[in-house]
Length: 313
Ligand SMILES: [Zn+2]
Image (cartoon, rainbow, N blue to C red; front, side):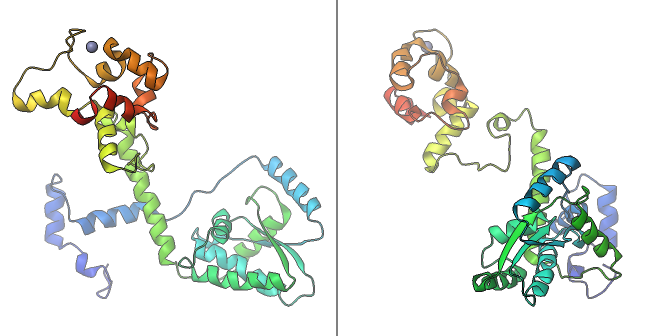
């Protein structure tokens, strides 16, 4: 940021203001400052998986036997700092060498799962490198038979270890500009991670037990009005049971059971609706999560309509 031409220079905070924010930490900093803090903490790298070595070695030798006529080619993707664009390049380089040989059957081993996933789930918009790989894969139709396979790194698989050492000994490791899409994906993952951590602590929030994961879609039902009703039932707040607070009236009471109306009483407890429960749910012994849990009961709204509660939610 000391460089005058730095693209974020216009967004940097004046030194005087920085001191003010330090002195008065209760003031919320501008968005650009908060975003910078998030990016600093993000580290922008993926965790590396680790599992029992000997199992991987056995699986690998089984796979080698099965594809013994395929010449193994090992690539080292993880040395290239965890962004998919560079890992894909690591796959691409050996492919170029393959093209000038007479052999037609190859098995490419890489320890970069994300690079392999990109090969399978690519879209035209994704990586320029992926497009190059696609072009090379067209050559498969000309008689090349190339299998892509994942091997875990650092579990004693010889070829992978050699590729790893070769990459390590390179004085100038493969330099590849980070693709914007990689950066964006990585930041999105990190921001979701922070959101989930914050949400995990909100155990007293009524919505927390209904939606413990921030990654799942918040809307359960495709129709907005129905989804709103479902959420109101889940948190137990409906117009019928709570409007007395706004109107300054007495809380409504079930005339049969002589208890205050609640969503629980109406849906689960009140014996007046037992025969309707049997009709719609085939049992009168239910829990709230049976009816309004992560996947609501398919007859829930028919039941609500029948007992006259649907339009009072
Ligand atoms: Zn009742």
